[in-house]
Image 1 (spheres, rainbow, N blue to C red):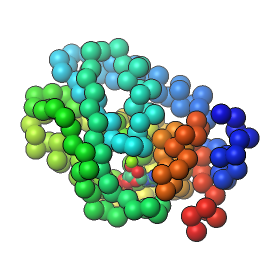
Image 2 (image 1 turned 90 degrees about the vertical axis):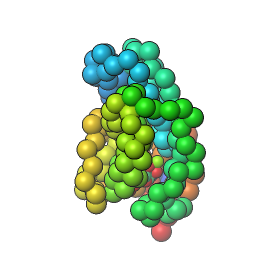
Image 3 (image 1 turned 60 degrees about the vertical axis):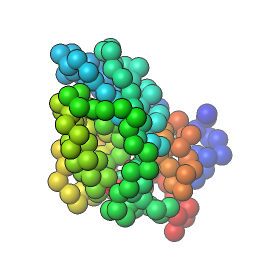
Image 4 (image 1 turned 180 degrees about the vertical axis):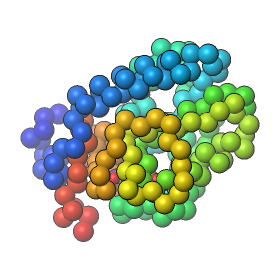
Amino acid sequence: MDTNSNLYQDLTRVLVTREEIAKAVKKLGEQITRDYADCKDVVLVCILKGACLFFTDLMREIDLPISIEFMSVSSSGSGTSSTGVVRIVKDLDRNIEKKDVLIVEDIVDSGRTLSYLVSVLKQRHPNSVRIATLLDKPARRVVDLDVDYSCFDIPDAFVVGYGLDYDEKYRNLPDIGILCPRIYE
Ligand code: IMP
Ligand code: MG
């Protein structure tokens, strides 16, 4: 999709290009390959729906015999900020006991969603639980959270594309852009 296509008209500007994303994802995949080289059972957990594109690209850059799982949580309404109330909509299919779990998320904002998820998954006795996020908005953090891997720190702006949505739309944009405030105000 071209950057002068219809969907791009709703952006203030492109913040992270598809080329920058691909480069960062490749680098992260190589790092994870090194860090998890000695782990026997690595499970990559995709947090639906936002992380779907990041997840499928990242897993192809990890040169290890990993397995994958999908989880869906609801933490936000249809607006631009999360409520802080996290609910598991779809849980993992398999047991993670004694496994090395890597949660793959699209963006860390307040940190509430991941903080809750990490605590839920830790109760299931995995060997380890770490977080890989594509984007991080450190200025918005309200809970203490260790983010192990992050591709890009971004400013406090509402972004869409490459899996991230506003009201379920714009996930199919190949780049990440700042959404025009007129769309949600
Ligand atoms: P947190 O619990 O506040 O960290 O919220 C994380 C979730 O809020 C993410 O998984 C996204 O679904 C959503 N979110 C936060 N910021 C943005 C954004 O700029 N664009 C799209 N979704 C966002
Ligand atoms: Mg999300």
